[in-house]
Image (cartoon, rainbow over all chains, first blue to last red; front, side):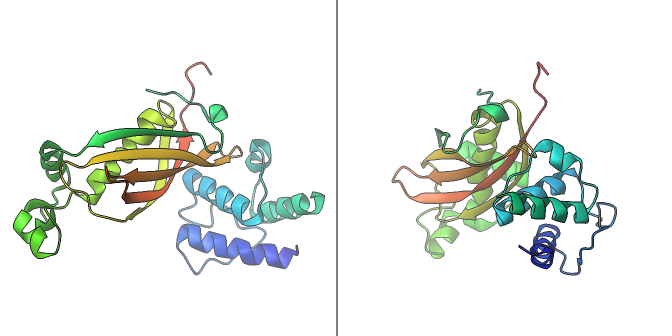
Length: 82
Length: 142
């Protein structure tokens, strides 16, 4: 799985969750950059990402994420460990 | 009332209950929703549209899903977060509905469960199906 592929899927997930086709994710993108990104949408994002990449995170991993780049890193790390 | 905690749930765990739709429920839902569409209010109009009687509000039927998650699965600690539903067939006053919820997905990272919901009538016809996202309130002993 490449970083480019993960970003492609993440962009699709974010656009779907927030119903906003203009979203273009970057490493530094965080909740302050997307108006509707609150705690409930955070749950919806994590669930959509877990389902898309067929992997499960734990609560600590999710709590420590500061931005999209760290989420992509986590996905790639878990994928490489499988 | 059940009081399942997230940790108690497992995939395929299911719970069901029955409710019969009454005239009083229709009146109450009209008051709550303000929906005076004749499909729900006038038998003659509903019949002119091909239905055998006035049609029960779809959201009255799906309001039983509030009971499903708030009382039965998971029950006491439920925090409703969202749902996606499809209305498949009409429901009429007097129908006895079976409401079934089944644990479909568990996401420990965010303590969220996806419950598959299915409502059928007394003839076994599916009238509503969907998925419900539920989180969990703080447990009283935590």
